[in-house]
Image 1 (spheres, rainbow over the protein chains, first blue to last red):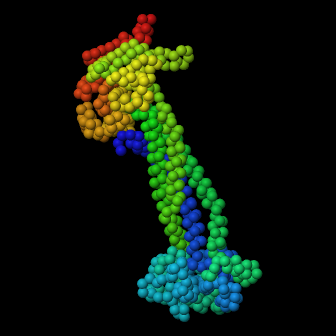
Image 2: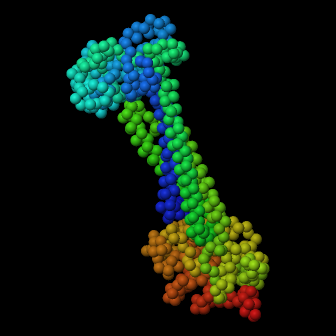
Image 3: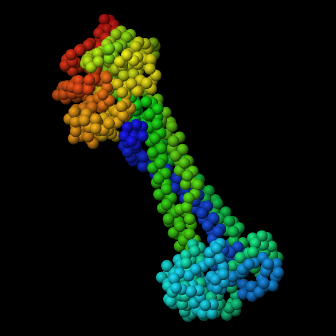
Length: 406
Length: 227
């Protein structure tokens, strides 16, 4: 490598290390921010839209569609109320509904164990339902699913890990969705199985038989036959066009919420925030390009003599032009490398937070075309920023800049 | 064949007002291969311009400069650059070492655009100028005498046919000055390079077998002297 424009450029960057790091740092910030904003937006939207637990819709009490989905699928937010368990019978009686729905699994919530939600459901969820195409819930090791008539529990992998629960352990649920000491129910549940990781919100939940929630000591007796919602798997997504108006417009007792469109609308609400972050990233990008230009341009004044010396040693104009362009590329490449480190750091933090809060695993480390075009754009911008100083280097008059004359 | 042959060389610079100022008018000059010539003249009399023309850094207004039979004035700039990189070594008054580079790298830099980097030769040259223990030092960590020795080693890095030395002792004390002149001559002898030195200092010029007065070479100066 020694000798030539590349070597001289490298040495020059090292000589002006502080300026190099500052310019590279601004590129890293811009590139990392752009990649993080775009990757997060696309991943969060696609993951949350697809993290439907294998269901197409939720049928719940009258209220907000978003709240219903967040509560029933993502186990966030509070329930807006309850609906009778007998709703299942009503669904069966209506021939249009019966033909449209493949599966309707009841869930009932309202309790927690040390902050992790306890949700009542039927065994059908674990034995028959596929949470992703071709994937059913599995138990880790020697555990088993719960007995619907016993005070038994299945614990999601993430919750089990965080709570330290294992098969054979017993626990007493706490009342409400928020963990408050001293609000324990008298009922004691025994863990019969730990579910394998699914990277869905199910991982954060402690599952008990639906009767358990309905008959829990301290719960209202008049709601003992109610559930929070029915998770619905349709035979065909076309049925949404029939069921949505049937429940939401013609009926007044229920809310039918189709998961994907509701989540898409939810993410559209954050579009303005993404735009601001995007704008900030563009501005940082421009500032970084400007800083490369300023650093190289200013250094040209000091470097005219060095350039003249190099020319006196036989360096061609084009070699010096290349040298300056290589310098701007070097700054950009270092910045790009740092931008990936920045991105990895942001991605690790964000995936950790999202996993902790929702159980959903964002796939921020899989290939995305933006990992090519963002660095490519930064490199191009840097090369353009280096052109003016490179032209100055190209045009430097040797004789005038070599020093004293005799 | 002569190493360097100059005919009717003339150079003017644009003046801020009025006609161009002629600084150089050399009707003829010749130098044999491996010979050593010292030119004595006052500061600011156009000697550096003369060396820049010989090195192909500047283009004359008219005249020819043949280096080993090749007319520099007819070559395009890139070819002159190439010729300078391979056949000419330059020693400056202010040394002109690159501050971000070590001694060794400065010498290797002299090879970069010519025969290609040869680290062992660069080391060998620095040993010859008694700087074997300063290879990784930067110019700012050396004395002025040592810096000039690095510059001499760099000038000879490509085994040039001709070494041009422009007031090489201008920044040195008498002791270092004497040593630098001896070193340049010795190394040029060893490498078989011709040496053209310009200086305002008669003591420097005195040690050369061939001495010329710049006034006798440059008709612009001789005219001024007459008037």
